[in-house]
Length: 476
Ligand code: AMP
Ligand code: ZN
Picture 1 (cartoon, rainbow, N blue to C red):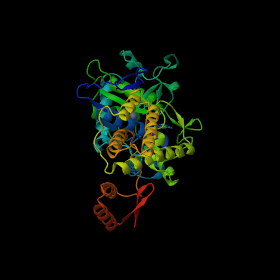
Picture 2 (cartoon, rainbow, N blue to C red; picture 1 turned 45 degrees about the vertical axis):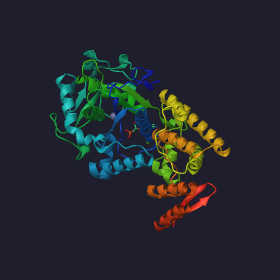
Picture 3 (cartoon, helix red, strand yellow; picture 1 turned 90 degrees about the horizontal axis):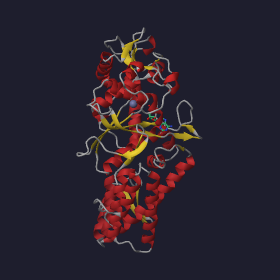
Picture 4 (cartoon, rainbow, N blue to C red; picture 1 turned 180 degrees about the vertical axis):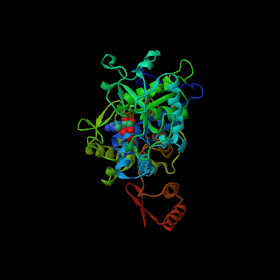
């Protein structure tokens, strides 16, 4: 079976086929954070979802170019810059660094630096795109010098506004404008591409053919995604609240510029992740019902426990965040860790070779995930495997080679889940590798080698204790 994904554009589950079917390269853009504060775990539900998509595409043999922008100029940021008296760079730098650190804490694969574009680094491309829209008659200047996108003109060219959401054009008054970056569906209106400088903007402005000012939020993503992935690409992701107006406006700007090859859309597949809720309401800064990654780390939870929780539900289903849910994720990880730990003991040296294509665990997991990334079914596969493996281990039916094969299969699945293995007393990887080698030496009854490794570990400041649950590393 091929990978099936729900596409917001067609409103159905369909086979994922990139434009480059032969080369299997995929261009994927995920709207990144607005760096005006620390991200909350609702935001990170969306970023962990993007990470899952990226990793699963890799697992299915696609070569993914993953672009994620950093929105570092926008209404909320300008307000905070004004309040704090910092420069734009100082202010956004703190939250950009914190965001990247939190992503790593959650074991997300961070895009390479050039695929993490900052809006302020793309002002010339943004100005170019607005210029193109103006030349095509789709952008106009308002009395204050700001430039707006004309929905009426866009629709007049035969283009469709309302591809991702249903809109009521009867209720819309032609030429009505909205200046703010975020607005509701009811206020479908011409939106700002370039906002003329006002005193409250302080030092945040750039020169442009329309005078000093700054870009609107929506045009930033159109310009950055097309600059890096081309005018027509495969996959665009974000949280469900971004479908309107942000993504609808991205389509209008990008397709309005008519830079796509004939017959090709701006984006082929749109994926929207459902929200993380708290007591039935969206987790958000404005409602104050949020936890940051940092809040939860301070309570003693780990990044992988938070990741495991955020990956527990299907991406199109909302779910409620609770501390009890996080405890549940902790218990699930403990079951996996225990099983993997026992397999390591039996296997001796861990065989990291790729499992065969017909490995039953890998096959069942792939079937589950191919069905619109059905993580619930995938977790069921994982826990059936844990149960069966524990049974085989308890019955003494697991050979060293068998355990190695199971570990290789689990390792392959984990390239998607990204849960890693439990950190052994915070030991660095080379220390864990030595400890694994010692287990292998003992299995091979090479006690002289095992003792030599123990001495080596001690010399490096680590002591290894053999417990009923396997060897444990402790810092001296
Ligand atoms: P922002 O930094 O506000 O631009 O949001 C970054 C991402 O987080 C966007 O893709 C939002 O759709 C997403 N997001 C915001 N709140 C939530 C939530 N409660 N659950 C899931 N995703 C969210
Ligand atoms: Zn965006």
